[in-house]
Image (tube, rainbow, N blue to C red; front, top):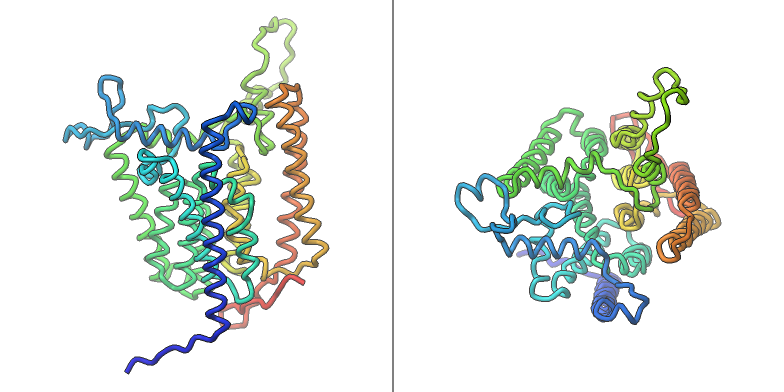
Length: 449
């Protein structure tokens, strides 16, 4: 006879409460989607502004192009399978600024019926993350999870504006969920899907390697480690091989290669934005050779500093080092949080949407921190103030046409400095694991004081 598991009344209450909060989030997001539909239909009533982000319009256009091929206008997929079989599949890369995997417009294809249907998929993804965080977190993290993610106004706003970041966050958290539960192959598959969706989750490889080698005690080159690597690599190859066979060279260029040489001069949080702006829009006037004084090697140095790949050096060095250094002495979620935060802060393009990448880790790592309430409040306040200052400068630039490029950059540098300081404080406040003499590590029993 199968034993019946007794569920206490407190567990039932907790489960019901979680479900009610997730339902509340779903209702709020649905309301915001309806509000967005209204604002987008009557922008003249709101100063010409639309609620929905431009990224959603780009992705929606990509969806329409895929399902409305027109060979005469050049809208036909360029892959060899399409040519060989004569398939009628459109090319989303005919839409300028479409730099995503074709999987994204395919996933939100219900938007062709009605925009609310496509955006509802993003809502479901954010709610699925809440469910996973509940299963990953410790008891007593009810308000931590729902305050940081489920009911966070920032998350609700970004998600309902049509930014698809909740999808990549879901794939990353699914990877973490299966790894923590010992499902190595499933974790590898989800990481492979995540990397195929957006390339940045590849940064987690050092952290996962250390986790499997030391925390799980599989060894650095143990069978399970090889198993994870092979399954993940095969997933990436199969998914991207399939997409390449349909959309060909444009798929590889716009989804991956473009981001290596991308130079975005539009204002954003990145400390690189103003130097990039100056390098692209510097004076083209010619200076007579006789009046030019050039130091030996100065041209070569300038070319190196202006090269798009130069910004990857500090970013990837820090990300790799943090993954290798922290992966064996901290929890995997903490290491992934630090890697993600460093990657975002040091990225050559940084917008508000990117902050969503590290927020899902916060409910999981906050209980592992030794930090006074005063310091916690101070860190949060400084980060919010830093963003507010930058946004005020950006508003003057974008809507008032003020000549404040330098001030926008200065505000970005201020937020950059605050972010680095916060990362340092979090690293200092973590309860690091200590070895117990047999190659394993003990879990830290720490909390926010």
